[in-house]
Image (tube, rainbow, N blue to C red):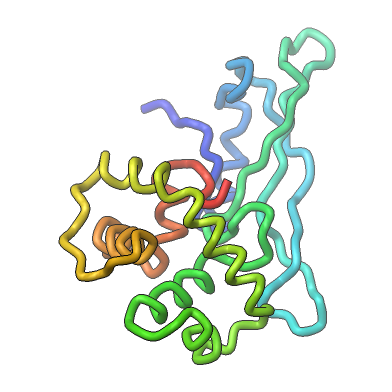
Length: 187
C-alpha cells in the first residue's frame, strides 16, 4: 500500500511518524520523490496559556532542489488537525462554541458560558469566515453523506449538525473534517 503525503495529522506522535516517511513520499507540487526534507517546526500562540506561550502547530516541509535531486524548491506545511491554519483559536474551542450556540441562545451567550480566552469579536470573525466557506464545506460533506434532517433555520447550524452526523465518533468534527478531506476548514 502506497503512503500518501498528508497535510493534516492527528497529533504530534502522528506527525513524527509521518515525518519519518518523507523520503518515500512525492512532492505535492512537482511529484519528485526522495526530495522532501523537514524544514522548521511551526509554532503559534497557545490558546491555553495566559502568559502568551507558544505551542507547536505543525511542521514545514521543503522539496530539495539542490544538486541532482530534481525537486522544485517549494515548501508547504503539515498541520495538527486541531489547528485552524492562520488562526489562534483551535478547532476544539470553536466546536464547543458552535455546539453551545446550536443548543439554543445567541452566539454571545454561548461565548459567555464557555469562558473562552478570546475577545468576542474574534469568534464573530471566525463564524463569518465559516459562513463564507459553507458552500465548499457542505459540498464536501454531501459527497460523503446526505445532510441529516434539521430543525435549524441557519445554514451554518445545519452544517454543524451535518458535521456531527458525519464525524459522530470523534471528539471534534472540525478537526476530523480537516483530517478526512486534507484541507483547511477556514481557507
